[in-house]
Length: 231
Image 1 (tube, rainbow, N blue to C red):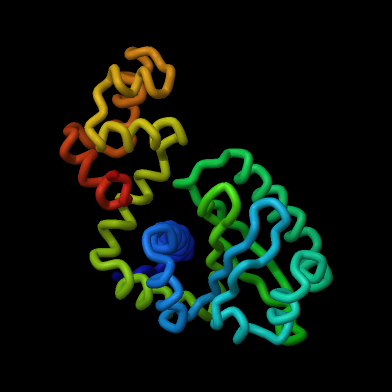
Image 2 (cartoon, helix red, strand yellow):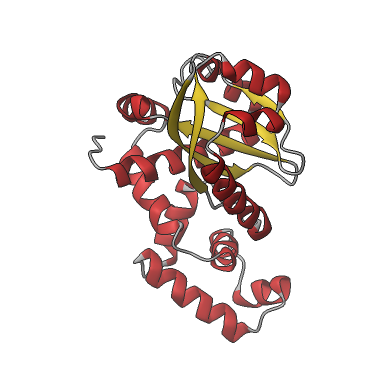
């Protein structure tokens, strides 16, 4: 897969975060085994106190400040960050946590001092569970590497990326209903489970089909499989 625009790279990194989170949930051993393979930084931190639980080795290679960040946490981050961007990222992250959509990804720009020089990069954040988030940071120098890694880690990556981009146009409620439909829940069962009227469920279903540009349940199921939503 060849990506050329900044928007492509931006969306690709968000999708990559989504896939890595799923891998972490399915097989932590395998997740940690690919650390040397992934050349752009990954970290896991706490949703409440922001303590860091994991830094990939590639993050340490970005600058000597990273080791101190791992040790000292958020108080140290404030001393090496662009204040305005840090405040903006904190505000975005706060809204993201309140939204509590486990299939959404929040991306924001950061600028921190690395090897004594202010360096800008994008971080994509996705919720792992009610305690942890997984974050992937994309530096300008990593963009070409990103294409290769994404292609090798996720076969048929372009189709998966397109499905994921359509999936991200759904609301949190629509994502819930899509998952239930794909897992063979009837309209009545969905209505009872989510405390919605049958009419509301049917309306959500129509909106889902329209946003995904599909007209058959089999197509919906294929997208759900690509998003690893089947139970």
